[in-house]
Length: 205
Image (tube, rainbow, N blue to C red; front, side, top):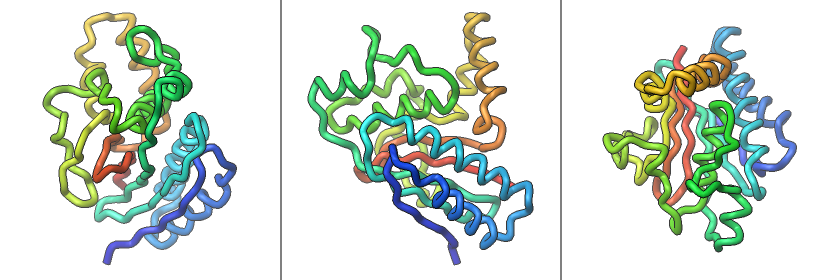
C-alpha cells in the first residue's frame, strides 16, 4: 500500500515547524535510517526556504510520497492569471526575458516555478529545456507524461557538462557542488500536469 503524508501551506507563510514535523513523521512511517531521515529533512528545509521566496503568497500542497527505493517530495500549486504589470512584478525580468539575478540551484528552480505559475498565458520555457524533454518527461508517481516540462536537475547537469564557456562552466559546477539539493536529491522535476504546477524532488536511499 502506498504511504504518503500531505500538508497545505502558504508559500510566504511561517509553517516550517509543522512541515518538518510532517517530514519526520513520514520518515518514521517509512522506517528510514537516521541518515535517510536527515536527508529528507534537509531536502524539506531547502524546499520550504525556496517556497518562502516566491513572490505573492499562494496555497501550496506539499506531499511526502513513498517509493520502493526511497521517496518523493512533491509540491503542487495552481497557476495564476496575470496581467503585464503582475508579470513584471513577479519576474523582474531582463531584456532577455530571464531573471539574470538568479543564483544557486534552488534559485533556478524558483525562477522556473515563477515562469510556470504564469501558465497558461506565457510559455517561456524554451530557455529551460531541451527539445528532447518537451512533453516527454514522465511524472514519477503516475507514470503519465507531463503536459509541459520546464526543467529537470538531470538535464541541467547535462547542459553544464557540455558548456563550452570555461568560466561559466566553473561557476555552474560550483553552484552544483555547493547545493544541498544537488548533492542529496537524485533528480528534481518541474513542470505542469493537469493544470497544476508540479515540483518533484526525488530521493533514493
